[in-house]
Amino acid sequence: MEEFAQISDESVSSLAFSLAPASWYYIGTVKELLRGPQRLELPTGQQFVAFREQDRPTAVLSGRCSHMAADLSRGCIKGGRIVCPLHGWEYGSDGKCEAIPALPTIPSFARQAAYPVEERGGHVFFFNRAEARFPLPHFEGKQDTDLLAARCFEFTVDAPWYLVSGNGFDVQHFRTAHDRTLVGDVKVDSPHPFAWRLRARFRVTGDSWRDWITRRFSGKEMEMTVENWGGNLVFVTSKSEHTCTYGLVSFLPLDKDRTRVRNIVWIPRRQSALASLLDPLDAMIRRYFIREFVRSDVDSSDGLRFHPKRMTSADKELVDYLAWLQNIHR
Image (cartoon, rainbow, N blue to C red; front, side, top):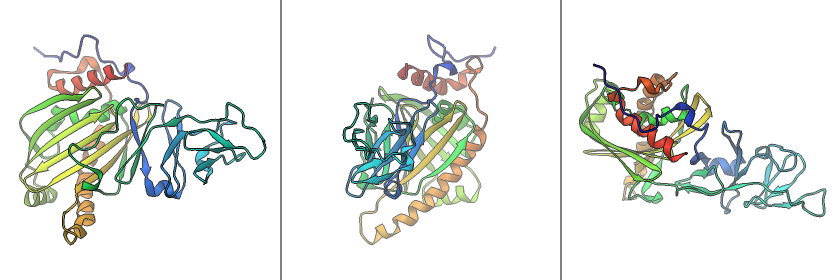
């Protein structure tokens, strides 16, 4: 007799998920912002603009000018303000219009919504609501100065954001992919109302050259922690006998069925000045290995769709995650 997972008192439905969750989003690096304003759009119709000048904090505002909806990301930065490319209206980091070339006074409607902004190791994140529902998390026990980030890489997946972000809780997938063998049971808990966490141990059993190098230089087994915050921001920690690697994954919904997956690999900085010279090379190598590791998930996730009545008992961890995710965004 076929067994089916007990989802929750109220069945999880794809219709219950918003086009984009209320959460922290990755918008780019500080270096990118110093070169000019950066734009980000969500399928909810929201558009954002991030900007920064040297020695001034980063700001994120609503991206369409309050006057006639010109795209502020096409404007310039002057004195810590972003200048509308159409009529020169100037907005400060708090969203307030501070100057209009053609008017002696500023109308009350002339302001942009401003959003919470945080930086992590040279990378910029913002919350897509006026107030953040939870602080921007970080890797447990680590400060920004403890880690070095490699260059971000990204993929686009033909699947809804909530399914792509649920990959880290798809234990059935763990048992059949990546040339890794699950050792023992997984542990799932919720360390924070807006966080869902899975911990598991794997043995590296593949026979590719990358698997051989992993066993030789990292170890035969690894302990992985996947911590999802808000549904679209995931912190992954992989510890083995000789190495520890950190990954931050940001999911950007493009529409109801497509998601951009942006990945940043972090490594612990070496303590001595001489040894630390190897850090950039180390980060680049691990970035390559993890990018290839993630690529297989991206390929196999294309076209993924959710059918509640087709979830079996083997999908329990994934279904529990989706039920939690649906609940925090009610």
